[in-house]
Length: 332
Image (cartoon, rainbow, N blue to C red; front, top):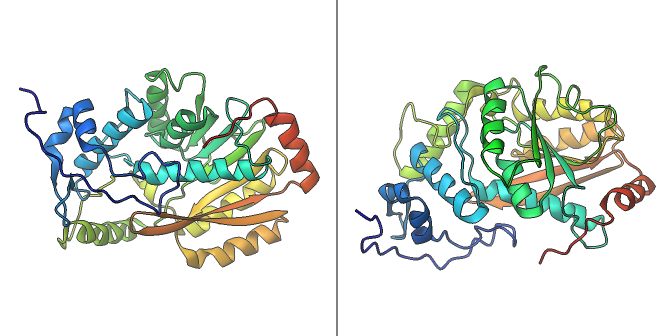
């Protein structure tokens, strides 16, 4: 029996102005189209607190099915499978990071975004979902190297790449064998990366992660659950790091200095504003030549991207001229 039978989905006219202007999901999801492309989604549709048909974002299964539908409909990804315990990331926020990095390259290239396989991005912590490479390839046709410390995550990410023609010859996944390294063991001496991106583990302990999830579930569903299920799932290495995001980023900064001439722009998401002062101090200590912050807002959460480079202005000009010429196109 067809799932399209007289389904009348109420439309939310609101535009998510906090998302990047090029974000495919800035306007409300076309729920009817998502259902047509993935009939399984209809099971999870219900009115939200505004009376608009949506899904229960506190339900990990519902979120995963929605994400699969979004990737299929908006990004032409046919296969997106990985274990339920792995993180199922919210797509719009991940897309925003990629778009803001494209803007950063644009700022350094006379207002033109470099496109195509001359642009190589390193994704530190690619995860089983391979989400950043998916969006970066779909939107800008960049090449990606994705690294991760988890063998199974690399295996599933590779499977996603191999099962989607869009990603073949565009994405390579590499295992990081030392959890204390970020660029060491991944970047070979002759390699150059135009940007590196990272979404660090946010929590400092499993208990901290559980408490954060309890607050999130209460905000989304109104229920105070003592032992909630993570609505976006996530294995320990994806969510937890000893010392939290602050210590993770501090170590990443130290390692980045050894690859000062290998990457044009280093970057990382920073969820806690209180961490910024210490991050800036470390970047100055390690002689970054330019440090910047790009604010982002997705959903009810505000975050930001911290960027840095060790290249001089002249080195940056030479880099852009030698690597990006011939790969240029304007994105409206």
